[in-house]
Image 1: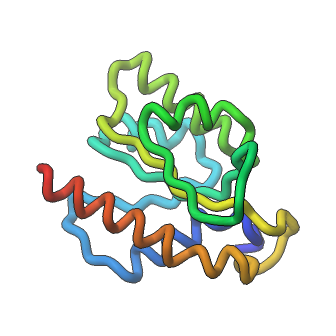
Image 2: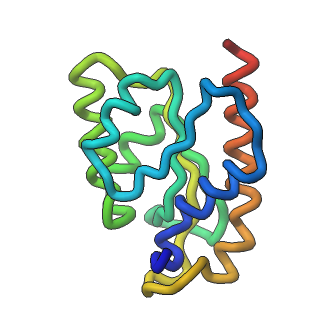
Image 3: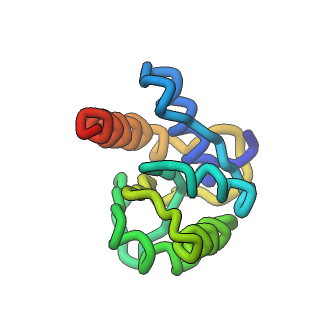
Length: 145
């Protein structure tokens, strides 16, 4: 947990798991920097939400939500130490014809990229909004099934 603000995704996932009760069809996975090892999860999913610390070209310190067509152009820009692995993974899933119907990335720009324990106060304040965004999206997906 020495990720500092780069650990935004881990903190958001943990908060989502602790504050939600979804059916078994909703899996929460800490993908960390596993890259290609997550391909089976991506290819077998109907929908995927990824939490991450991300840095848009022009940004304010707020929660960003990117969906489907917005995502590929955005993730090809370097956002974090492991983001290119996710981009490549999506490319492979697409080549296999096994892309999820929905892909969403939820994140916020880091305040501090130094290794620390826990998030900066600025990102800690954004965590509840990011988790609520994910809960709303998952609830919508479940109601559409």
